[in-house]
Image 1 (cartoon, rainbow, N blue to C red):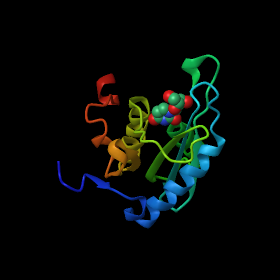
Image 2 (cartoon, rainbow, N blue to C red; image 1 turned 60 degrees about the vertical axis):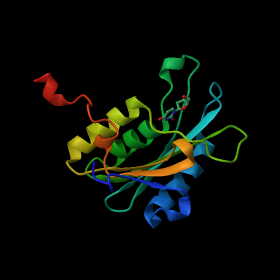
Image 3 (cartoon, rainbow, N blue to C red; image 1 turned 45 degrees about the vertical axis):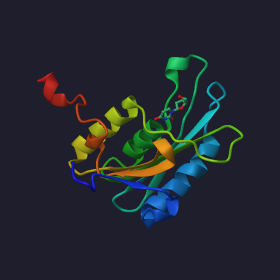
Image 4 (tube, rainbow, N blue to C red; image 1 turned 90 degrees about the vertical axis):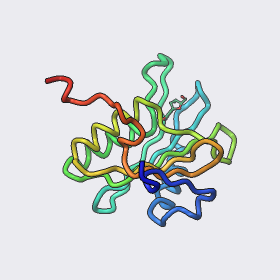
Length: 157
Ligand code: THU
């Protein structure tokens, strides 16, 4: 794996400007989290090739398996509203309810799988920015790095 495939930063200020902006929008989106069960507020913001930003927050349900992650809310909103535009980058952040400071949270496997489908479909990489373990900001050059053995349409024949 090349050194620049996944970059780690101690401070959010060390990220590039676009990533910082997406982190800011993702933080804003946490305010729209509906998470009465987990009390874990997640926000995601992605940027399209033309600079349009689409955000999402996790939406929970009393029937727990129906809960939807922030990343997939943002991704499916983008696909529904801007189907022709490629996604360049997605950021995700999380904090516990009534806590201002972010808590490390990397995207779940289901979201990585969905991101992978978007990346494969558009044939260009999607960068992923997350606040990861040990309080390090992570910038991944493409989704495939998060899920090297993801399922894809080739298996379907
Ligand atoms: N969650 C996300 O929004 N994104 C992830 O990648 C992992 C988990 C949400 C789902 C649920 O509402 C809450 O966090 C606790 O799992």
